[in-house]
Length: 293
Ligand SMILES: [Zn+2]
Ligand SMILES: [Zn+2]
Image 1 (cartoon, rainbow, N blue to C red):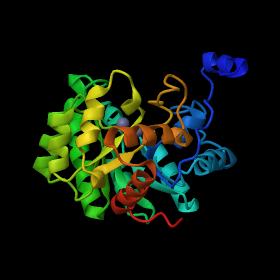
Image 2: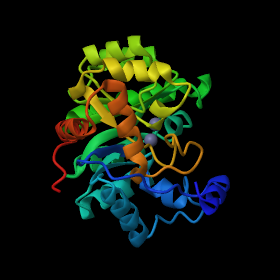
Image 3: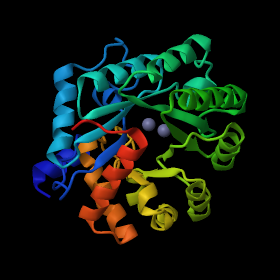
Image 4: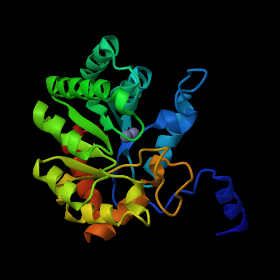
């Protein structure tokens, strides 16, 4: 590392881009708006188009020409749908996030708007939805579950994928999915379970999306989970700006860093990087439909 790179590292600035992948892969879950403006910016302004285009171009340059932009509330879901409509490299997912739902935001008007957006041609998933028992306390669990169930129904009504956020709620998420009847294409974003939970999800036909957490030193249980997941049920994602993969853990994440996670997944599964990239692209197109790039 050069001295200036070491200084940038200490400042926690954006890490450098990795070596490009040998074949195109997909970032199946990113929040470009949060990367560029933070979570719910005070001025309420979305990022400038030029900045968004530069972020996407940086991902394309390392072999990541397909992204899924994920909304977490009504405003960001609308923005995600608009971005996907204008950008061939981007598809959108729309939802009220479980923690927002736990705080009472998934009211009838919000759910009606998610339902409206889910009908748009480049909105190909409902999510992220699910249960989060880490950030939401017991007082919000009933509202969170009601919202999760409503999102499952919206996904099925429109025939699009369901993107699950599951934090410290593995068994409860499966209980709700089994009870409602999971959509045909259901993705566990930022999969966080162990080998036994991976087996339970894979047996139901669900898709497991691994984030930068796969590369963390203390995440042996995730590597075990990834190793036993069938190749055609795997995805990778950044969840940018969160969960930055090693060697840049702790610094801001971006779609252009997903090659670190792809390479870690190749090592864990024993599949060549190029073959893995082809599988990840195939899986993403099966789950979300074609991007048109
Ligand atoms: Zn999430
Ligand atoms: Zn997310």
